[in-house]
Length: 136
Image 1: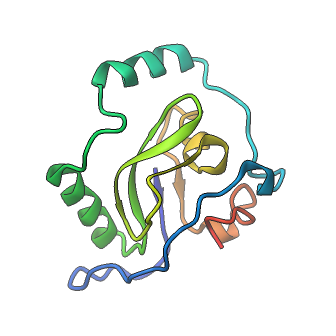
Image 2: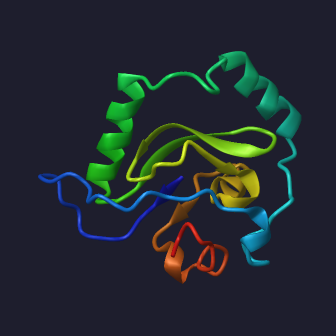
């Protein structure tokens, strides 16, 4: 999933942002709340469990990929997200201090529904995400 807006600046790191707070699902607007599950949800979750990566310590290789994504796409926030039954857990993050958020509060909940990459040029202009407190 790629989300972003801005000029590509390969020479400077992403800007610092204030710490993020955990978003409660009852704060989500109707356009953001989704309970739909992908057709392959059982298989997807089983595969995720086989990797045994959830709730593991940070790893330099993942952090390098996250930093690269932030730089290449000139993003203030970049995450490597793993979506389980109830949350999106962040294996690596740049510009976002929370280590997880409820699944319903994430853009990832839409990404797992798709067979193609989810590309959102500007979340502030996309009706599915514009009112999400994480986008504000």
